[in-house]
Length: 270
Length: 343
Image (cartoon, rainbow over all chains, first blue to last red; front, top):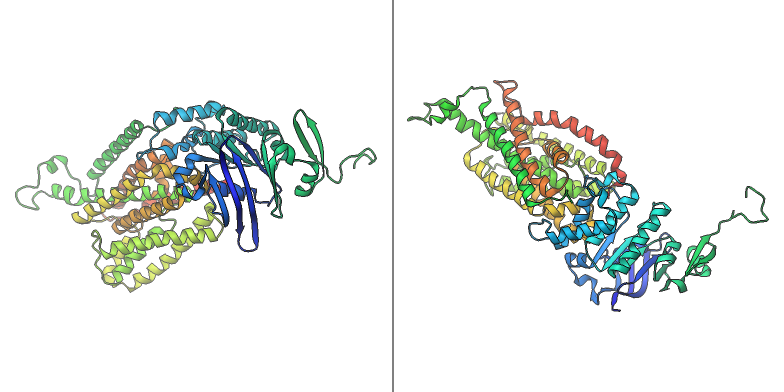
């Protein structure tokens, strides 16, 4: 498989005192599902913004398909990478299908009207995300889970080889969390997309991703196959919390243990 | 898939709005202090000038004034649409944001500096109005961001304060104007549509139509930009470039409109909001239809202004403010609750 995203000695800081990322290097091949995990403030979203070209690196380089990210125009990059951020309600009452149709912006001609090819891409994206039945409703009238599916549909209609997602399941209930990740996995398998998803949910990462990049708040990181990287010791070091791990099938899950975890010796109420 | 705009649908709606505008302009041209008969108008100017007063009033007074009102309405409504999109704020409007007073300050400065009040293409006054307008946009945007991000209320607050400041400077300048000019200056500041010569009308029409056409070419990008700069960039739109172009074009057509009619407020608020309720938020459609219906709106307001206390006349800005003020307050109370979800 060809190298799809290559990051070398990447560094970024918000001002001289706040160094978020330093000397970060990793590469993933096309068709990989990568999770970027870590505690709050470790720079997960910053890294995503660097990968999407929204922020410029302070040092180091990012290559997309073996070409430096800054050699792409905004329009060219939008044909390579689609980004899904946390769902939100836009100010104006765009309908769901109008939102999805905006994915075609980098492909539109001078008059900026959707062609039949554009319409097919939009219809297919609605179909895959199972959103066609509420496509005509305003985005603000949908539930959080439905809205997030619409933003994912938009990313699909953009027809990019790479999909970046920033905590796509934040604020969603368990059923919708799994629903969104099932959908992403389907994109990876059926459409051979490269998926990069930022999450602080270690168990979603454990269950779905092939590779994981674990960022610590002190700027260090670990990168490798998910099964090898996720251990109770490492999670305690990175997240600062003890976990209990259990395995079902091929996946190992981790449950955080707090101070008041009920043990057999403690009296009821503790 | 029923919801997407096609060129055919757009053209149908534009023709509908054009027809509505034509009807409004025709009816309003017949309304006025002086009753005129159409048959007299069609009889032509007669052999000697001044013989056929009906014709003279219709062709030399009513028609130019209605065209002027239409131009002002189209410019202000289109400017409102564009500003609302890039500021992601349904309450943005050239008058409320202080852009109109910025342009007016430019005109006043040019006037006091001794440049004549005629509004011709490329005259120093037009350039001053444009420069002041675009400077104001930047100032409002910059202070609004300092005051708390791109939230609905911080931008409006910045606009209101800058508006108040510019109004004070304009007052100061007004007191320096000699008494002969005073009344016309005050009427102009309150937003009034009077007689303008044919060259002024033609030049303004070209500027305003060109400005709106230029905005139309980026209207699909305005859709995307309404979701925020980051979202726009991931969808292949350069947010800085489009924002700058839009600021410039919106300031330009606002400056032309202010040069024509002074401070006419709330048109850019009332019209786009109503059009969005009817046709939806797609800017490819919202921009041209708002411009046409904005033209019709100001023609109607101006007809009210020149007939309601006839034979005297009100400034048209009074009528638009009486309609627009309450609409603004309703929208403010509705959208302030949404502030937290804006990006």
